[in-house]
Length: 291
Image (cartoon, one colour):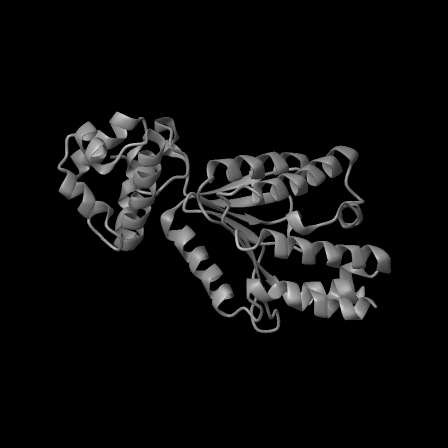
């Protein structure tokens, strides 16, 4: 095994075992195999495979078995253990943390790629302002008014792509954001002080429609920014996390750090003031400000 494996001793074995189960589930789904077929393909006992894949199990196969699975299915051992995001053998050198510099146009392409690679996993994110898929074109034009034509078109395409993605039957997406961001929109305060009332009203009505239409595959949680803080970031299932820093993303590819961010997101959900099934009602209340 390569030098990256020396870091496993610093990672909770439960996290590694859970990542292994996630990756094995993905391999099984790709091949359409049941446990018996998969076990036979790599020459291990079905009952042993069942024990490795049992929920909550911390057992892992021997190194020889991991290498056999990796060699048979054209993936790396690091990928099987959840240490890297990509499953190509050549990607073993992918660092656990890296910087991805982007323009608005290239950011849209990167996000689309990461969403596609995470298909079938839960997508969870904290937006910088409003979730892309909930923006109207008018609000998008206001927020991205200083962008170049190419950057603005890329951002608008990203908004539409996310909405289309959220309508897929297999989608599982959670978003956490401060309810103060929506209050400011309704009141025309802060970033929204130059937005005409009718544009803000259309945006609120648009969010009400979509949060009702897309629930429960899309779930929006609202928390109190006076009590809790979060930077903008996205969790692409167990594959990677991306923290937005402006013109770059800090990409997290390691199990240990992805688990930490997942725990932070879980905390935002636990402390949310408004649950997804109540969000549309809260938005209707904010509409009173616009009347």
